[in-house]
Amino acid sequence: MTYCVGILVSGGLVMIADTRTNAGIDNIATFRKLHVFETPGERVIGVATSGNLSISQSVLALLQEGILNQETGQIENLMNVQSMFQAAHLVGRAMRRVYEMDGQALEQHGLTFDMKVLLGGQIGDAPMRLYHIYSEGNSIEATPDTPYLQIGEPKYGKPILDRAISHDVEVRDALKIGLISMDSTLQSNLSVGLPIDVLVVRRDELEAAVSHRIGDDDAYFRDLRDRWSKALRAAHQSIPHPPYAELL
Image (cartoon, rainbow, N blue to C red; front, side, top):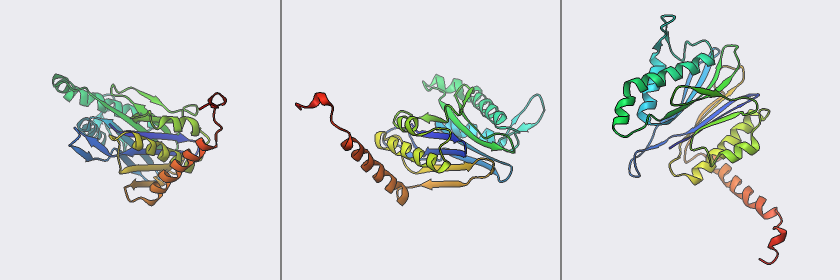
């Protein structure tokens, strides 16, 4: 299990992912799930993955090495596609290609072809975009009405995003809210764990403004967790008791 979130607001993009993977309670490891493909001034693309690690690594290898486009005869990868829509289509093709290679063997051993991707970024002067790409290779796109997308374990962090995220939220606030969403997931699901990788891209800057890993020793994240817990306690204590609870 994992938790990755992408938030696309008017000022830019925030992507956050944990790093925990496991194949049983006694086989827990750390692997990066948020990957950055960047040529400063030309393009910046974040790819966050959830699901089967071997599938994810195979798909990422294809996105780096490239896939032949039968129509143009060109090898396409994330560093030469011309738009984020083409990038999302390329990720879908890579996922279908890996399924062609490994899907049947996985299913014969009782395993499902399980992988999902968050793809966000900007290429040239085209709009910044954020996609959720499913195991089948199809995708949906974030919009001003739905400015965030999640993969992995969404339910613990979703209520915070629903209440606090809108398209006009500042990028710094989107980052803070995303980290609170991640903390809520860490508190409630042991299969999601530190370190956390963070990518922030301001709109039209075409390079990462923040590319940071949060570990156990991160003072800001510890303070955020403590302040959020205290704020929740203070909030519920400040709300009057229900009038029908007078006899309790």
